[in-house]
Amino acid sequence: MIAKIMQNPPVYSKYLERELRSDHAGETGAVYIYKGIIAVATFRKEQELIDFARHHGATEAEHLQLIESVLQKRYRSHLLVPWRIAGWLTGAIPALFGRNAVYATIDAVETFVERHYQQQIDYLRKQGEHEKLLELLVRCQDDEIAHKNEARLKSLAPVSVILRFWCALVSSGSAKAVLLARQI
Image 1 (spheres, helix red, strand yellow):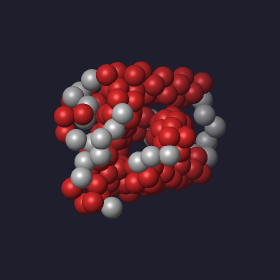
Image 2 (tube, rainbow, N blue to C red; image 1 turned 90 degrees about the vertical axis):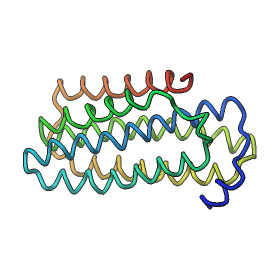
Image 3 (cartoon, one colour; image 1 turned 120 degrees about the vertical axis):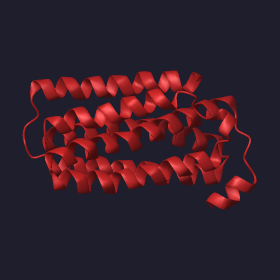
């Protein structure tokens, strides 16, 4: 599927160009979330988090490759350095506070991403076009839902007020990042 799409880059509406640009930015940030987790977890010798982040990071790297395969380079996000830094910090900061903070953060991020992809999936289904893109987005969304569900299952401790605030900040930041990525 990927090779076929890359040989004949589709022409998208301005709406889809902007949405895919935000997906490109988001998947870039997601790769770096897991790099941030790995960096801190390696320092702290938390093998469970390292394994979790490596597994999920590989999936996010695949998502990034998929998005890049359907979005011409000129339409991709131009703010990759800020997305990488923001992603890394979004992973590293909670990793400083332990597994529960990481899992709550991943839950918050993936809940946002699930909804973001759903808006695009609904649009494509309504338009009845770009069937391969629809399949790609559904596949990515399914993976994000699995990440969210795994993080929820692993998070056994109650979520503190500070952690709830952090997760709200992460969700709000994700929404603002999407708005910005759609434009740049």
